[in-house]
Image 1 (cartoon, rainbow, N blue to C red):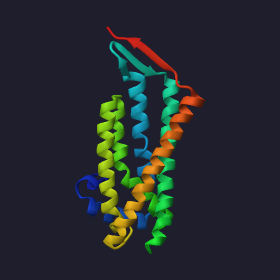
Image 2: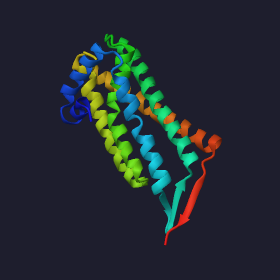
Image 3: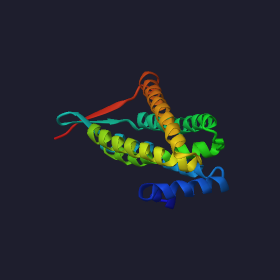
Length: 203
């Protein structure tokens, strides 16, 4: 884990200052963070759905075929990248309202670091479980929201009041983008790609 990621969970205020300085020096510094960490959820989900499986009934385990799991994971990875990019563009657009002038790269970078808890929550995909997913994603949502409200004033060089208002707007749009992209991805996977399930009786 890189130093900025560790600091996001231990010293978020200092982490945002360091990240902003890094982005000013290297405008596409966030790309490695985004492209690599975004692999965690799909890779873990592939392993969990093809090798571990889940139970819908007693003594029965359901898994996905490798081809179906691969389709799902590619869609998930692309959805993550597109979602972060869209949020970055929206943050850039909103920044004009608050007299901030970050670049598009800085805004996408901010979005990428803000959703880091969701990337790490992807490890839960190794063991597919509805309740585990709800708990882990709930915790990731809470901490990402915290990072957003703490980081917006610091990263965007805004007054605290402006930063909090901007963060509230971003949070609302982010929720809409997340739901829309996930619903579109699931509908495409179910209706166009038609997943293949493998069922096995245990015991």
